Length: 167
Image (cartoon, rainbow, N blue to C red; front, top):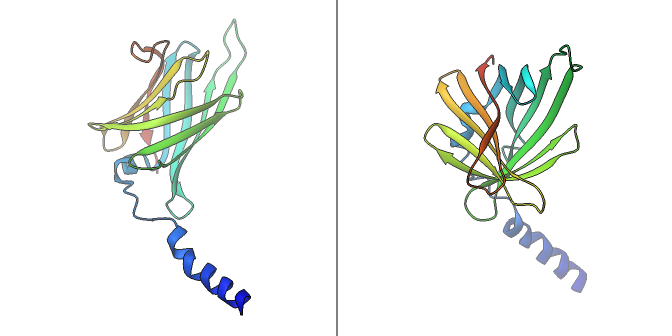
């Protein structure tokens, strides 16, 4: 009898711990799709493509990115791949975690500005702050900026570019 009671209690408690699917992802919708772009900055001029897609029954928003910086007279071709997973924070708002093929991991908080989604890194010991911004220029174009700061206030642009939605 106790075994049946415990099983019944467990089954009745499952809805209390289920994920709330009422997350409002609408401020990210302009980024959903596949994009191609060009940019330049400290690493040089390059081109790339990336995608943003909802996954896991709309519980996360995933960016996959590949940038290629062509070889020059002084350097070899560089390929940069990364993955970022955006998820609802505990409480209001969103967080993101970023991984790349160079071994970097960055934890971000997400904020929204007019026509922009801004990812701001959380402070880590002996690491600068990072800021990644996507700004909607028109229906199918975004401006992208990747900046860093030693103090979290005064940012310097490391890379910037533009991308066009292809799907």
